[in-house]
Amino acid sequence: MSTANAGNDPDKTRQDIQHTRAELGETVAALAAKTDVKTRMRTKGTSAANGLKQRLTAASQSAKTSAAQRFGTVRQQTSQRAAAVKQKSKQAVARVRGSAATGTQAPGEAGSAAITSARAAAAKVGSAVRAKPVPVVAAAGAAAVITVMAYQRRRTSQRLGRRQQQLTGRLPLLAPWAKTCPNGLRRLLSGS
Image (cartoon, rainbow, N blue to C red; front, side, top):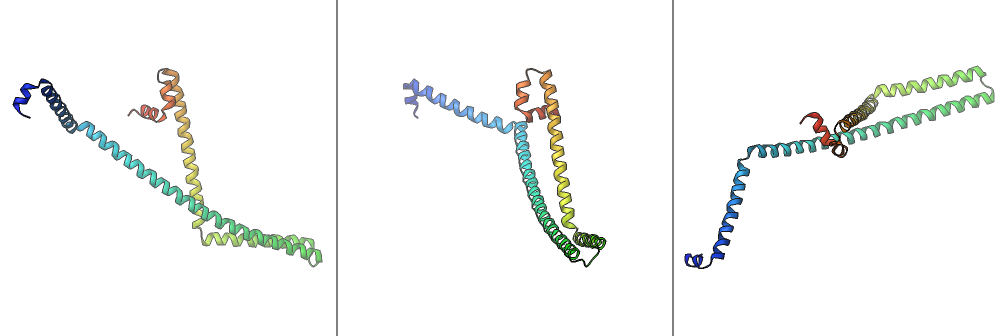
């Protein structure tokens, strides 16, 4: 741009001034953003917290699927063992009925044979569980973890519901917000 043209066209000069002001405003805003340490740290903290939440969610999901797979394996093994015991007990009952029908044993002896057969089957299952206790312990642990998680979730929702009712009863202006934003209500209650 030449000085001779600038002096001749005042509209062009005004546009140049406005353009320069806009550029200066953008530069000042960029410098202000760089010097606003509080906002930068808050943004950095928020992104770190979100990353941590994502990692925790992924880890808990992985633990849940792993526990579910182990529980399924243990359940399958248990059902197979139960089916084997059931089959053996049916065979024992059939033997007792067969011997009772032929009259080779007295009625008291037939009952005694069934009891003995059932005890033998129970002992066999017990020894199998004692030999490999890990699946049984894993199933019990998984059931305990699931029960505790369900209990905690229920307690938290009940506690939040009671607190929400208390707040909506005391603060009528907060009532619509509290009903639609339970996470915001949690933050409000925790004081952050």
